[in-house]
Length: 302
Image (tube, rainbow, N blue to C red):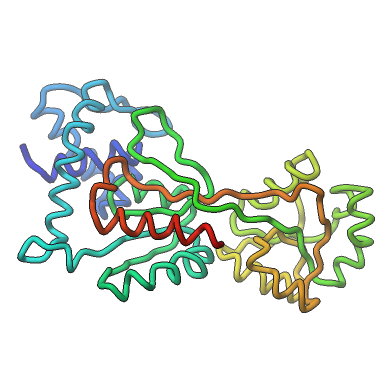
């Protein structure tokens, strides 16, 4: 049986769609479709059921994936080892949100880098990171949402740390809202007309804050700015572009210097939990297990 067909099959199984697997493998969708059909002809059974939102593995497809995944992953691991079979040249591939990976994860891994660990980092939102992790393109993913999927899931996740979200704006916008006392009394209505900034079109940080603190979804806003890096959001808010929900760690200096004002100080501040996700079974690899344990230990001080 052609190992390249099995590799494509496993990518489709983990990604949940032909399109997603094609993007992860660097192939066209017709090429992925053709390889899946070729493998189905070889095994004599359908491996996936096609649907409007992707593909669902058949019972035989699920069984095949769980049987071949450990062996294909092991072969991939062997190709990363040095010529003597050691792991000295092995790289840790990780992904996650740009600001969190830059400020938290990478500095925490420096002691392991000094001991010889090679690190390759990339950035992505939760959906992108989990899809790439499931397809085997990364070893670790930091995400702000627990991976979903019916058991046995190809991914496992461990809580890493909690971060407090703060509703902030430049002082002139804070003055226009009437300040924290007025926002506390009037709720979300006091913020109508203030442009909003967020890291994604779906406004995930604002939506979480609004539903947690105000008990409602944020109303559509004109003048909304979307930029996929919270550091850029911070700079725009400081410049007076509007309001945003940001991690306190990121905006604390601007709050202390007076560049930003917290529009509300709720009795129970909303928290976001970050998770450290891996593919099931991969923590048997020494370099990955070491980095995983190291990050969990470092996160106790974040």
